[in-house]
Image (cartoon, rainbow, N blue to C red; front, side, top):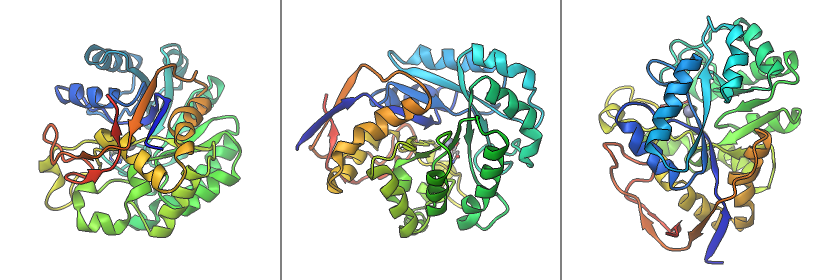
Length: 330
Ligand code: DOR
Ligand code: ZN
């Protein structure tokens, strides 16, 4: 098979940033995705109905058929009273960042229990809880594993709340999600399907949180994506940072994968003999979990090489300079 046409995918986890760069990032994602769940960790963060509506308008202004699905950031002092209004304004999820876990999360949550009134309202209004699941004080490679008891506690306390453990990066998360009720799902990024900690050591420009881990963890993530398991769907966590911020001591966390996503996923699924599983992973399972209709548009990917640019808009994209054997058909 030298080409595949699939329902136009959704990116269920994306950072589009703000200001003048937003336009580049949004346009890049729009080439491959019909919808995207827009992360709220801008500076300042997206927390109120006004913030959400202003941010959505900014995205709509620079795109054509792209549908931004908005989120809000849960802060320690978030008012449970705004959840119903957020829901009326089509906010699809609330994002829980443990304080200090990743980029722009210093204002996040130190003890999850402080969110209980907010989570109760989210459960009542069928709003999804999106989680960056790491314990920031743990050793880097154990941060996600150590978070799983917290995830389990939240799930048991709010059994009807739909929860996405974002960008899963370790085998234990895959096992936990598989064993949990259908209200718990996992999103999987391109870079956690490809990279390990060794790759990050060799090229710190791909440093991101959660950090890619061992080959065994990557194998478990691949198995979840390749086996047609509807509890796992695609969310890129594409997170651009300018080149200057990615060098020197403690480079910023985040990797800009958006420009290479579908070509690289097609190459990976093809090489593993599971190209037929790609459409469900990027276009169906996530939409079902979020109770969204499937997109009507389609997109074709062909077995034709592309070279990834070294730099785009001052950002070094993931896999910069390498050749990918698939590309978008235009
Ligand atoms: O590496 C990351 N970068 N992980 C996140 O969760 C946030 C993101 C960003 O915003 O740069
Ligand atoms: Zn993210």
